[in-house]
Length: 169
Image 1: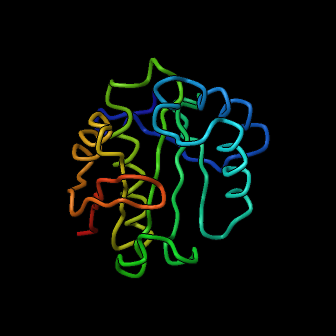
Image 2 (image 1 turned 30 degrees about the vertical axis):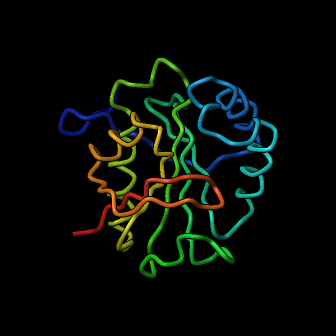
Image 3 (image 1 turned 45 degrees about the horizontal axis):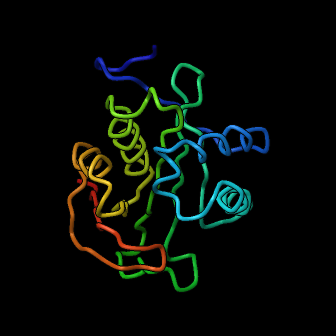
């Protein structure tokens, strides 16, 4: 396992058509399906659309060459009417779902998010937001562990959300 300072090092690569069957299988996993409002087919259609968009970057997260998570970053200022356009210009939002059940609850979520956000900050992003469902306590704890702090609670077009942010130093 690739490690830096004792921590796993994750690789982030663009989603391809070849990844869609794997993503569909992950979306059907109970620990993932619980937090996606639509079923796997609708979610795959959204991911396929994001693959061709300028405002969302869909990624596969790999550990030692094994795909273990789906992560996307998006710019709320590029999407007409996005509910997070009140955030400072340059802010990016992220979403993450760990696919294989054996990778859930063992620290990968917070480690992936922390490493990815550090990369975004290196590229000049001033703020990253994430919006877990208020009932998703495991995710909220993972994001807090990755340095995010709650700044609001909202009812959005995506459902209820705990708005969390991490700002560049």
